[in-house]
Length: 90
Image 1 (cartoon, one colour):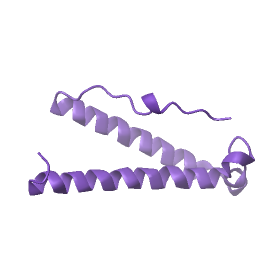
Image 2 (cartoon, rainbow, N blue to C red):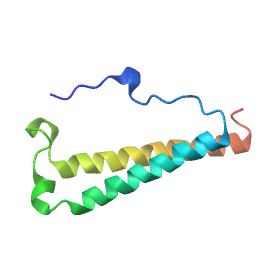
Image 3 (cartoon, helix red, strand yellow):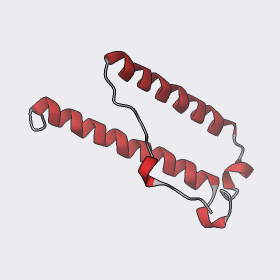
Image 4 (cartoon, helix red, strand yellow):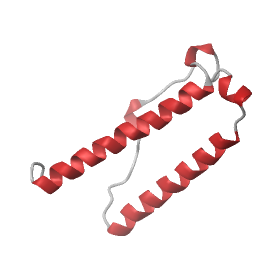
């Protein structure tokens, strides 16, 4: 069974410089590219296999969930950016 610890789901140090922000972005882009390349190598058989066991559904379902979760957070970032630029959030 998978176990999750929400207390440390996304540990990150405070970003204290523009360079630290750029480094974080670069690392994210690199991992996203690796993930996309890996998924591109999966054949139909592997995509339709269960992820660990039947409890978690097929690999394709979980990959889709990862992508949709990333879109959700991207939407949050866009909303925050709009709020900051409009002066609603200081």
